Length: 381
Image 1 (cartoon, rainbow, N blue to C red):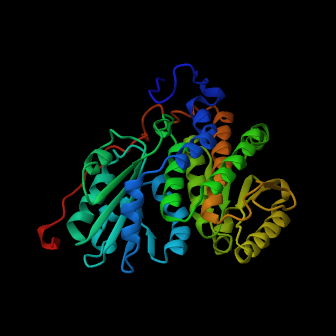
Image 2 (cartoon, rainbow, N blue to C red; image 1 turned 60 degrees about the vertical axis):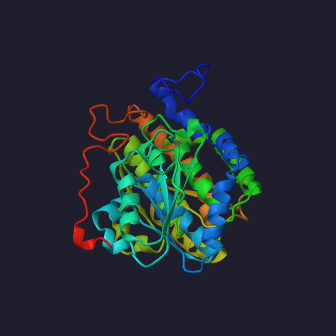
Image 3 (cartoon, helix red, strand yellow; image 1 turned 90 degrees about the horizontal axis):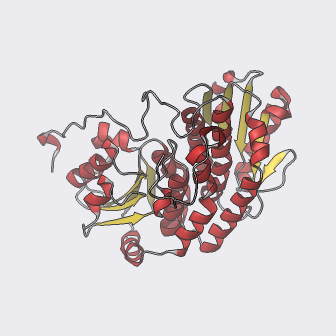
């Protein structure tokens, strides 16, 4: 595989060794420091003026993993800005635009898009332009040549923020692309500091040193994986479940939920071949519910079937140092790297090709085959 974003001196490992995907997971600490080290003055000014408006609505949008990015960061943005912030997938907006776009509400549409070439990406921004009287766009993308970036590059009501070129992942699954866009959003709109980025980068370097342990966890041959997290960590649980489903080409079953929600029916999925991963909140109140479900699951399944990821010391937990003072939207970035490695090593253990787990093309890196139907004249302004 040729990668124009990676120096030619860096050889791509064989698929059984992780392919480009293992490089893209491992580059995240370095990439995050690069993201935090650069600053777009126009974006900062553009957003400062907008977020000063008390009537502003912020919509975080994308498809698949890019939609889940919005679910993860929304709580931090909501608290920091004191504004109405909602995560709504492009797939929902395109299918039912009048259920989600409000003509009379000034709106900042934040689009997450690795390539910007998914059919729904540009369609969502066009629908917002068509329906909402006052709308502005923040485009977070990894591909300067993508359709979304090119569409919004020269508009005065838009800012396009490009991630470092190497984050335009060549592997099938979004890894460094996703976390870089989330990080940029938190830096711009969520109150994250450069010191926070350094803490996250060091925590991930700790995870990178744990790769052999994560690989051993992947060799247990569980048939079902359940991911649990509350608040912004529920979006993380959803993304983690998707990552494993993608990289194993659907060979394992995955579920996600909140610790409280899991008891209301989904808990029926548990059996002797289930591995549960619990992402522990840094919020003292929320963490009580995490600890309750951990104790319950360990009693039912045994400690070996419950993997706990925490920013604070807990018995039999994977503890990531230096993150206890960060909010859940921030620590989710580091937690996600653990989940990415687990998905990758599970894929390899099952004989998949992680850079292309669907060699017959049943599922594509960039979605194909979607027809965008125009809005009827009767709903236009």
